[in-house]
Image (cartoon, rainbow, N blue to C red; front, side, top):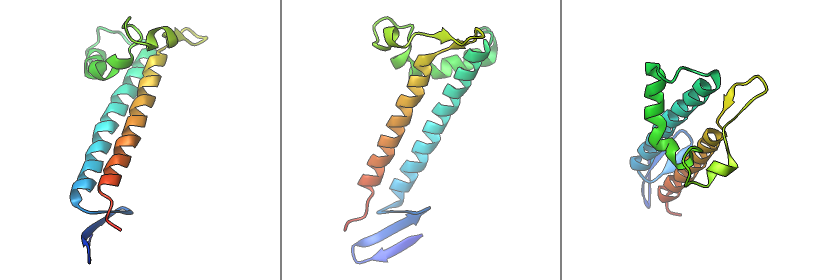
Length: 127
């Protein structure tokens, strides 16, 4: 919904008031992109925990899709600081746990929040 004011037009959408629809679209784009990242990382975490066959097509697709996003915190890469701090382990039943993947999900969540706040600050109406 558009609201006319003395300072120009404001856009009201789901409780947010911003200067233009560009900010709303940017927030929606961020939600879709980070939602896809969370979905892929979640699937990778579950497949790793379940011990999925690495030669299966679905597993290879998910590993290929998350490879570039996961590389900055991949514990198998020797030159990154997470290698010694977050090694892959297992639970008591022998299921593998990739702690670096959990850290990657948390890091992307922080980036998501920061980017969302940035869009909101840039799209904030003048006072």
